[in-house]
Image 1 (cartoon, each protein chain N blue to C red):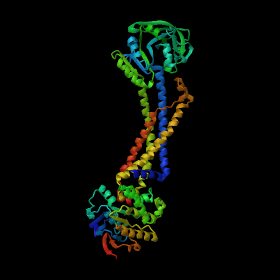
Image 2 (cartoon, each protein chain N blue to C red):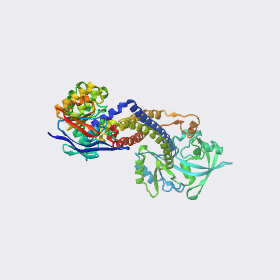
Image 3 (spheres, rainbow over the protein chains, first blue to last red):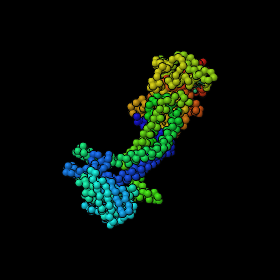
Image 4 (cartoon, protein in one colour):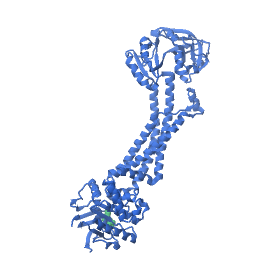
Length: 407
Length: 229
Ligand SMILES: Nc1ncnc2c1ncn2[C@@H]1O[C@H](COP(=O)(O)OP(=O)(O)O)[C@@H](O)[C@H]1O
Ligand SMILES: [Mg+2]
C-alpha cells in the first residue's frame, strides 16, 4: 500500500506546473463557491433575523385555529395556566411578548383606510426590537397608554400628525362592534413600505378593551435565553401546553412561505454553482486524462511486471484524490479568513441598490454569512465530484490492453 | 536437467485485413534450467511475439506453453498477472524503468509487490546493483541514467527476485556497441552465478556469440537451433 501512495505522490510532481494549476483551479472554485454561498446566505440570514426580531420572534404560542384563520375570535386567553407554563421554563425563556393584532378601519374627517392594529406591551416590545428608536415624531407609547402610534407611511396617507385624533372602527370579540377615538402620540418609521403604510400601535390593555377580548392575545411571543435552542424549547413547550386549544410555532414554521421562497431562490443559484462545478470538473478531468494517456507505456510495463490492475487503479485514484483534496483543503483554508473578513466588513453598496436596501431598513451593505456548514458543504460537493472523476482512470486502467499499450 | 519452458506447436496468427500473418508458426521448443539462449532472426521474424507468448503477456492461437509443467495459455488474466510476478523476469527494449522511482527502488519493485521482507529487498537490491556496476547510482532516477545504465538496472531488477527465467527482448537494440557488450557480459555473468534461465532476442550479430544456445527464427518458424560450446 505504501508503494502505491509513493507512486501516486511522485507521479503528481512529474509535471509540477500542471498539478499546481489543477490544484489552484479546484482552490479557486471552492473559494468562489464559498464566497458566493456565504453572500447569499448572509442576505437571507439578515432578512430572517429582521423578520424574527420585528415580526415573529423565535417561538409563538397561539390559539389552535389562529394560524389557519387569523381572527379576533381565535385568540388565546393569557391566563394562569399559560403563566404557569412560562414560569416552569423560566430558565430557558428570557422574556415573552404578548400581542393582539387585528384588522381595523381608521378614519379622519375626509379619509378612511383599512389597517392593522397592533396591541403591544410597549416595554416588552422595546426589549424585543428597539421599536422606540424608530420614533420620528412625538413619543413612544407608555404602558396602558390610551393613545395611538402610527406608522409614518400611514400618517402620510391619512395626512395626520402627532396630536391629531383618529376614529377607529372594527369588529370585536364574538361579533361585537369595536369603536373609539384616539389621539396620535407618536409616529414611527417602519422602513418596509407595505408595513409602513398600514400599521397602527396601541397599548395591549387599550387594544384588549377596544376589541372586548379581556385578557386575550393573538400571539404570545417567547424569546429564548439561547436562540440556538429554539427547537428544543418549542418541543418542551409542546409537551405541556393543551394541544386541543393551543399551538406552539417556531419562526421556521411562521416564516414557512418566506423560507420556501428562499429555497426556490437557492435552487436558482445552484444552477450557477453547477456551472462552476462543471468547469472545475472538466479541468480536473483533463489533467487526469492526460496523465492516463501519457503513461500508457508505463502501465503496460507495470502490468507486464505483474502489478495488478487494481493496484495501478488505486495509484491513479489517489492521484486524482490528492489533487482535489489539496485544492479543497487550501480552498477552505483561504476562504475562511476571506469570508471572516467580509463577515466583519460587509461590502458597501451604492446607488439604486443601496437605496432599495435602505428602504427596507437595512444597512446598505452585502452581508456575508460565516455559517461553518457553508465550508463543509462546498468541500463535500467538490470532493464528491473529484471522487467521481477519480473513478474514470480506475475504469480505464481495467480496460487497458497490455499488448496494445506496449507498442 | 530440468525443463523450465516447453512449447508444443505454438502458434500465433494475426488476422490482418490483407492476409493472416503467422507471427509464430508451430514452434515446439524446450528450455532447460540455467540455459543462456539467444533468439535471433530478422525483424518481423516473430521474436517478440514468441517471447510475449512464453512470458504470458499474449495469448497463443494454437499450441501449448508449459512453465515448470504448468499450462499457462489457458490461465485467466488475473492468474497470469500473478504468475508473471512470481516466475518471470522481464527486460524490454526500452521503457523498462518506472520513472518516478530510483534505481534501487526499481530493482526492489518486484520484490516489493511480492511482499518480501524489507531487509531482504534492501540487501538484494544493493547487491544486484553492485553486480551490474551501478553501486554509485542507487538513488538516481532513470532520467539521470544513460541508456546502457537503464538497461543494466532493468537486468538487475529482472534477476533480483530470482525468477524461474528471464526474458529480454532486444535488450541491446538501443545501445552503442560498448554498452551492448557490457550488458551482455553482465547477463552472461549473472546467468552463470545465479543459475537463472535467460532468453534474449536480438538481430545483432555482435552479441549472438555470447549465448550458449542460438535459435534462429524465420517467418515465425525455427530454422536453426544450435548449442555453442
Ligand atoms: N499486433 C499485431 N497485429 C498484427 N500483426 C502483428 C502484430 N504484432 C506483430 N505482428 C506481425 O507479426 C510478425 C512478427 O512480429 P514480431 O514478433 O514483432 O517480430 P520481431 O520481434 O522478430 O521483429 C510481423 O510480421 C508483424 O508485422
Ligand atoms: Mg521485436
